[in-house]
Length: 133
Image (cartoon, rainbow, N blue to C red; front, side, top):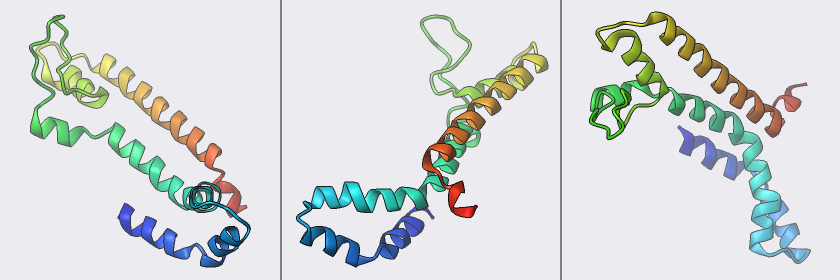
């Protein structure tokens, strides 16, 4: 999906912009950094933000492959080597003998606030919403 959108965005950039920049004496690196990349980021920034949010909460892949393990850490921590926050939260809520649903709920709220704040920062930085106003 990401490939299709990015290739469509590349094809939507008018070739006249690159030709005009080349005539004005811009190098290929300048054409890419000053013309192509800003136009691509305007289109791809919502996909990058959604991809970040999905990867941050990618519980099913870690749980199915390793279950958050291996658990044999040198420090004696309860977090495994492949745990991320969401799989660690699941382990706190449902995986251990002492189920701590309150702590798991608090960690879930922190995860939400973290992902939401980074996503809002990315949306504001990319100025995607200005095109809809």
